[in-house]
Amino acid sequence: MKISVNLATYTSPGERYALAWALPLALFGALGLVFLMRSVVYNFNQYQKVQRNIDALASKNKAMSDMETSLRKDLDRPAQKAVFQKAHYVNGLIDDRQFSLTELTRRVSKLMPASARLISLGASRPKTDVLVRLSVVARDEEGLEAFIENMEEAPEFTDLNIANQSQAAAKLMPGMVGILCTARYLGSEAK
Image (cartoon, rainbow, N blue to C red):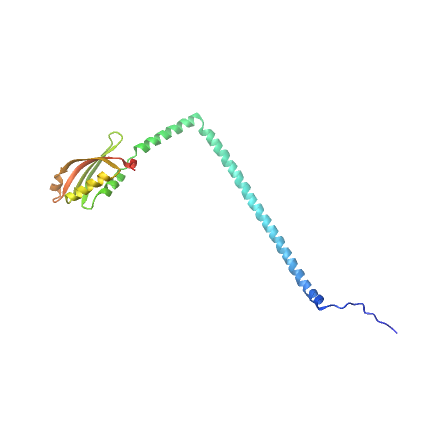
């Protein structure tokens, strides 16, 4: 009689289930590993690119610093200092002497009431101040009074003097009254 022995073990349903999913999970793990490796390589390349940019900026910064040092040494030479001081002095004189007639006209026109008109405007600079001569006409005395009040309240004009109340305006423009006045113009010094 012959006895047959079966040495195979019985597989449970859980083992069969694990064996069926082993291949797809191994494939998914391999793909994940490939993705992680590509990500590591990409990040390493980006890091190297950023490092190269930082190195380039550092070298450019050093070159600019060296250039600044050499320019400062060049400017510190006595001949260059003298030229710089002269240029600074001339620029200061230009700034002190700067006077704009259009700015003066704009400021005077802001002070004009609706019924008054500026006929003539003159400016002279005897010493440091600007002396302004104005000829103004208006339809009535109230317009002239409003102009005079505006001039007296304006911070850019001081020492208002009315030279005369002109009757010449009445001859040139019937029904109008006029004045001739002078004032000191402070310009940019006014606060």
